[in-house]
Image (tube, rainbow, N blue to C red; front, side, top):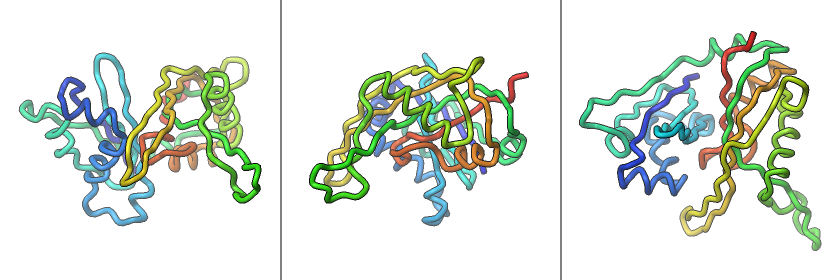
Length: 218
């Protein structure tokens, strides 16, 4: 597995347009893997990291990406810009029960609401709207994904919230993207590594669900 990062130029017109549409960024990310089959495509996670004044596309994948076209479309091609790619498996293999680590995730907090007519067994997917609901969702998810954020010495906070509206084919898509940061404790390393590999929540194709962690805090 690989973790890659490429800086993008937020002042370019094409970049500004892409930042408004996860569909555009998703297409650019997937074009970085021309030899990847359908199964591999399902394992790609990505997100936009805005670390003022810079912005980056962060990608987690089974195959090493080639970001040449992303640099040409959204970066600084005239400067012979490069990107960073690290092998991720060794890092993940060192995650242990009891590790305390800083984390960051951009997620789509949702809930399932049963319909009154009872026609849908799974219920209707609704966005969590308030910060309180969104924090509660993250705490609940952590308990199911092998880590904790709601104990002494641990923390989770919302860094940003963004309502996205865009079109996918003939459909209008609306979703809320929330960036969380904090300090977590690994309760079940096997389950947590699986969470890192597969992501958290919905809208993964639209830049949500990817969780990254620091090295263990002593």
